[in-house]
Amino acid sequence: MLQIEQLDVRYGPTHAVRSVDLSVGEGEAVALLGPNGAGKSSTLRAISGLVGYGGTIRFEGTDVSTISVHERAARGIIHVPEGRKVFVDLTVHENLQIGSTAACGRSDFSLDDAYDLFPALRGISGRLGFALSGGEQQMVALGRALVGSPVLLLVDEPSLGLAPLVANNVATALAEIGTRTSLLVVEQNVHLALKVCTRAVVLRAGEVVLRADADELGDRSALLSQYLGQSDITAPIV
Ligand SMILES: Nc1ncnc2c1ncn2[C@@H]1O[C@H](COP(=O)(O)OP(=O)(O)OP(=O)(O)O)[C@@H](O)[C@H]1O
Ligand SMILES: [Mg+2]
Image 1 (cartoon, protein in one colour):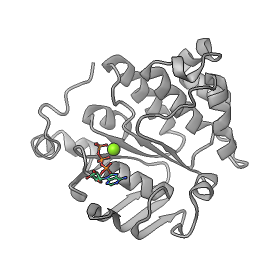
Image 2: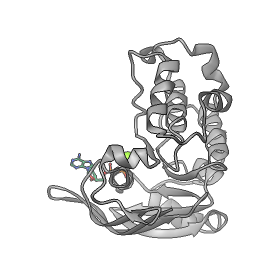
Image 3: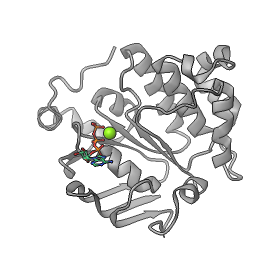
C-alpha cells in the first residue's frame, strides 16, 4: 500500500525528516508518534505531496514523486491536516459534500456513512463551519475525508485540543474507519493511538527512534515516555 524509503524533508536549513523508512500495509493502521517538531506532520505532507522531499514514496506500487497533490488525492491518498481546516462559510453538510469531489469514482464511503460514524453531525448539518466547536470541526474534517473514499487516510493529531470524552469518541470512530481503509495516524496521545493502531513508529528530531507493535508498547512504556517527554503515556484518556 505505502512504502517510504529514506525520506528526507528540508525547509531551508531545517532538516525536518531524516532518512525515514515507513510502510503501511493494506488494511493496516499505523501510528506515527513523537514530540513537537519531530517531523510527523512533515512526513504526512510529503506523502500527500504538499512538500518536496528526497527518498522514495511508493503508493500501491507506484513511485508518486512526480504525481501532483490533487492526483495523489484522486488516487485515494486523503489527508486530514493538523488544525482541521473546515470551510468556515459552508455548512456542515456542504463541507461533507465537498469531500466527495476526491472520490473519483470510488464509493466505499457515502455521506450517510459519515453521518452514521458521527451521529452528532446530523443535528447540526445546516450549521456554518465558523460556529462549530473543536470536536465538531474534527468530526467534519474526518467525515469530509471519508466521503472522498480514502484508500489511505492520513490523520494529523485528531485529538489535539479535544476534551478527553470527545477525543475518545473520535478514537472510536477512527477505529471503525480503520476496519475499512488503511490508516496512518499522527498522535501525541499514545493511548488514543493504540486504540486505533496495531503498530507504532516513533520519530524524534526527524529520525525513527522506535518501532513496535501496539501490544509491545505497554512493555516499552518507560522508553516511550522518555522519547515523548511524557509520563504515564499508556494511561486511559477518560
Ligand atoms: N513550513 C515550514 N518552514 C520551516 N520550517 C518548518 C516548516 N514546517 C515545519 N518546519 C520545521 O520542521 C520541523 C518538523 O516540523 P513538523 O511540523 O513536521 O513536526 P511535528 O512532529 O508535526 O510537530 P508538532 O507535534 O508540533 O505538530 C520543526 O523543526 C519545524 O519547525
Ligand atoms: Mg505536526
